[in-house]
Length: 125
Image 1 (cartoon, one colour):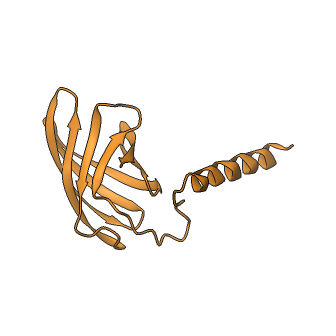
Image 2 (image 1 turned 120 degrees about the horizontal axis):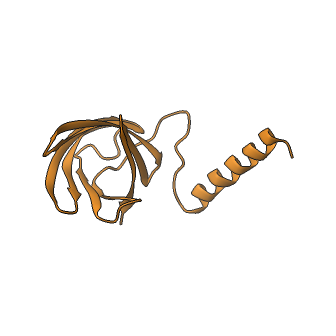
C-alpha cells in the first residue's frame, strides 16, 4: 500500500471511530452549532478544567464566560466569542491575560492554542 493510500485509510478509520463513538465530526462546511455550557477537562492534566457558560448554546455565533481551574492556582476568569466550530477566548491569569484560539475537532473536544501553549479539553458529562 502506498504512503498516500495508507494515510487516507488511517484518516478514514479515525473519522469512522469518532462517528462510532456517537460524536459529530466537524466537517469542512462549518455549520456546527456548539454547546459550550459545561465543564471541560484537559485531556493531559486531570487537575486542569474550564467551566464554560453561554446563553448562546446551539446558535451559530455568540459569547461565553467562565473560569479556568488549575491545581494550586486561584480560579481565573475567562470570556470569549465563537462562530460555529471556532472561538477566541481570553483567560485573565495571575500573570496577566492570555488569549487562545480554539477549534472544535469533535462536538465534545476542543483544541486551544496560543504561542507557546496548547491543550485539548473534553466535555465532562
